Length: 479
RNA sequence: CGGGGCGUGGCGCAGCCUGGUAAGCGCACCUGCUUUGGGAGCAGGGGGUCGGAGGUUCAAAUCCUCUCGCCCCGACCA
Image (tube, rainbow, N blue to C red; front, side):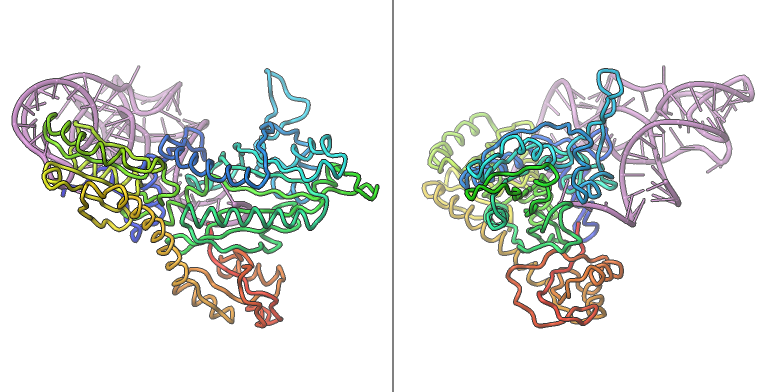
């Protein structure tokens, strides 16, 4: 075969070029004229809409309501919470002019909305009866990052941010963990991305949080990607914005806060978890289109006979099995097959004159490439089964990769050797000190991804200082 | 901000060192014919004042100065 123009670099050759090639080939996104920003193209945006649809349903089912807070925030708001300023000030874009004049107070384009939201919550929360307040918003935020990559880190990105207010620490903690569990379920059941749930170290936690929980995933290059975070903000923001409520005992108390979010980064996670050298691979549960139908014809007559033949098959499908019929007659089938592979659609159905004669259709799985000839009459149920199987096997394959690339280390030397030779996640003892954490980072570039909930309570010792380790930590090089 | 690289039809590049009279190649696009079960072939065709501004010269994509922008590698991060 002749060298193709829009060739996808192989993963083994250059993983990050492969990543950008897959995005280009699947038409998910493009670079904007403004540095670090991305244009999300229809194919990419459809995935985001699919993510939104499922998560939004999960949030609403747990009592959350959507609202919208404005893009522009008075600069002084950011300064109200000490850690928050420190964390976000350097990466804020600031508007200083408007209507042709210098503004009296510069306006920050939100990097996250805690401050504006808590400013409003002060007005809305008076009594214990106003709690809990459970609000989510879908929006864009801007963070002036130094280095950007499509979907993984862009100057502007889309996300949802939940902001809740509670009467007690326990309530806030319960909310924080409930959301984390929603994220875990979503990642595993829909995105087919196995994740490790856990708590962030103090060094890695959100600026202004009491503590941060997260889900961490392993990409195909064995690096870690944070896929979602849920923060217990304690009373830090309530105090910074003077939000109090009068409790049943008549006393005025601080309000407890949480915030949590996932972003368009999830699309990057999807790509790097499942896709292959032929292009995008999407799990059926999140794929906007589940199946591409390719009729193989030479003449108009053949085409209409095939469409007639396929009609009952397609009508017999469950309504959630969305499909696209590629009826283009200006490209040949080879072209359509390649388009299918790049687009990430989980399943392909082909039917040509030969299949028509034999009363069959051909099903081809995107994940394995397996080809199956099935009788047209039983196709609908076989399609459903196959999609379910693709979903399952994508998850298992990703889990297998993570398990095969998760290692232990008792000493820093062993840690370094393992990281260098094998890469992946390293489960090791950690005393809890920032110094030891920093030392690992400096010497290996690996960071603590999280303190996993399900790690065995380890009586071991810290791999750096040999002090007692209360709990094992997952270390990895991260995106 | 430190180090490297690059701006030439829609995209990817060559030409620049050694200025010289055709601005070229591949892909894409348009037209026609033949093709059509894994990115077709042939023929014809349209499209670029070479990032911008100055300068040197008889002559600048090419040399000089300034400027704008982008990409890659490091410190920050969902």
